[in-house]
Structures are given as C-alpha cells and as structure tokens.
Image (cartoon, rainbow, N blue to C red; front, side, top):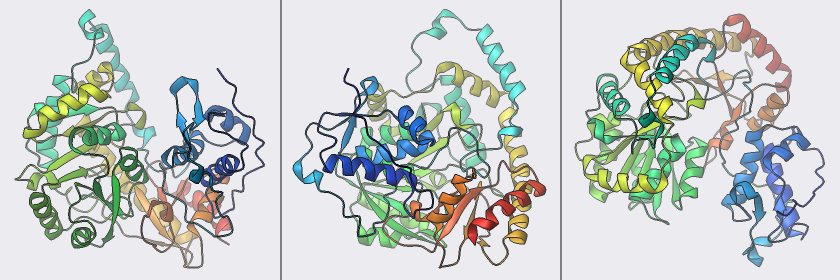
Length: 474
C-alpha cells in the first residue's frame, strides 16, 4: 500500500468568510493544480488530518466530499483516498482566489462530540436509556440461531407492520406493511429511490434553502438539482414548473420546511400533486420532524392526499430517538414494490436486525408514543426558554423567527453581518451553529444563523449561551 503524500498544512483561519471545510478543499485543489499531488497519489486519511489540524471529523469529511463530488479524488475503501488517475488536464486549472466565490453546499457539519446548540440532535438527556437497555437485553436473551442469519429483505416484518400502524394514526397515511422498506438512514433512502426510479442526468426539484445533504445525495446519485425558491407558503411550485417542467422528482419538506420552518400550503400541495401526476414524476416527502409542532396538532402528511401514488414518504428515527441508531424507512407506492425490492437487493443498506427488533418492541409496547408526547412538551418548554433568553441578551442584534414547530431556531442577523463569519467564531469557541448561506443554492438570502434548543436544559443555560455569543457579534 502506498504511503500518503505528505503535505504541510498551515493553520486554517476560523474567522475567514470561507468555512473550514472549504479551506481544506482549496488546499488540496491547489496542491493538485500545482503538481504537488499527482494522479494516483494517496492523500491523508480523515483521521490523520483530524489529528494534524485539530478539527472534527465532519469538517474534514465535508471538504473531502467536495473533492470527490468535483472529480478530483476517489475513495477506494480501506485502501484510502486517491487523486483520480483519469483526472483531465482541464480539471487541474488553478482556482482564482482573487475572485470571491460562494462556498458549495456540502453535508452539514457534524462534530464527533455533542456541542451546545447542536443541530440535528434530540434531547439525549431525556431519552429512556434504562428502558432501552432492558428491551435490548430481553431481545438478546431470546435470540435464536435463525435471528443471526441474513436479515429479511426490506426490514423486519414486525417492525414494518408497527411503522405502518403508527403512520396511519399519527400522520394520516394508509399503507400496508409490505409498502414500508427499512433503510440505514436518509442517505440510504435517497440512494434506494435513485436506484429504483431515476436515471443519471435527470432533473430534481429541491427547495432553496434546503438541507445540505439532500443536495449532496442528489448529485452523488447523478441527478441534476434544480433549486426552487421557498416563501411563506413553502416551495413555489409554479417556479419549479417554470424552471424544470420535466423534472423527474421533487424533494420537499412539507410539514416543517428545512430550514425555514414554514408549512407547505394546501393549495401548493395540490398543485405539486397535480404536477407530479401530469408529468409522470415523483415526490419525495421528507418528514424529518413533522411530529414536533407546538401550535395545534401536527399537520397531516402530504402522502395522505396522494390519490395517484406519486409520493414516496421518507421518515427517520434519528430525530425521534437518537442519530446513532441509523434507522429510517420509506413508504413505497404498491405498483413500485417490485422495482424497489430489486433495487434493495443491489444496494442493501438495512439497519441491523437486533436494532430493528428493539425499535419494534419500543413501538409495540407503547413507549414510542409516550416518548413523542413527552418530547413535544419538553421541546415546547426549552424552545420558550431559549427564545426568551436570546431575545433578552442579544436584543437589537438578532431577530428570532416565530416558528410553529421544529427543533431549531433561526437567528436573523443585520445585513452588515456575515453568518459564515459568526458561525466560524462560534465553532472555534466550542458552540454549534450553521449559516443559512450554506443551506442556500441558486439564490441569496439575508444572513441568519441556525441553532438548536433541544439540548438546552433551562433558561439559565440559555442565558449563559447567549452571553457567550454576544462578544462574537461585536
């Protein structure tokens, strides 16, 4: 095995308008353009660069993802990551750093440790770990030899049945257990959809702004994303039709738009369904935190209005239980089941059977429903406490959007401030934040910072966090 080419990395600039992952991307691209790294050279591993630069794994992986997406490097599994041997000469053009460029959207930053205000994390302190351990122990004691063989295709039948029952009651979706396919996460779900229904080069509507990994997933599956603007009523369907009337798929977050928090209006829902029927296209409904609505009841799913079987409903347990569970699911139209079963045999990607069994028991014994109810009340309290503290301490410096649901806040900055610069300062001081600018494709939005409140335990903790942020905004 060849040793990686040794590169000397000068310290990165946490105060730069360029995020750290973008700086890493630029360093490697420049080294390739200057001939320091040649086709076939192995570059340092993520772990090695983590230790050298003192950065989180997610930051390094985001930079490497950009290099892979643009065709500079390729991963060969355990052998390492290499500069592509077939790299064309035109790809080696040195980037003109004198012209400011907008950072490309890449998978969202994920530190290895839990940071204050961290996005994408449920209230880990409130999860019933002892109960979970008890359910797991019971399943392990009851394990039979056949349970240790290959897992059932598409997921454990009992779990698929429990998910179907839950969706009918909680989200208004009528589906059979056979329509539910269990996957190992959102990325696996999107890859399965692409494998079963889509072709390389086809267009895909995507909300702008939107969850960065969605854009990365579409591109990695060979699709051409078409950013469609979002307003107070959700995705502007008429703009999507104008920009790409023959798009093959639209990916939407109708219950609670990611990240703006608006809901897709009924008229827009009907327009979207009508377009899909007319164009013979598909809609992927990403219902990532639809259960968490603090004003009134959770809204019915878009899938509940789907009379023509054009909607694929994608759900995940990462936000409802915990992210490391790596368990998601997809509700497939009955007429497409054979295509998805064939694709699943090719791609695999199911969650371990033992984990599926524990989740099945967690739902069947009523713990899941009670957990959702507890979290809805807890998040409502933590959200109020965090908003109150931030408005008190950061008065005049930020405006906080009023959102009916969700798991994060949007802190609107003055037009003179840079959301990327503030995020870099917060991360350098051990706080979590994401810049709205990094979630936006194809348009420019006023600067804003995204933070979560789910792990902020009380108002005192929220006030302390706001006081830590205040000096960074001066």
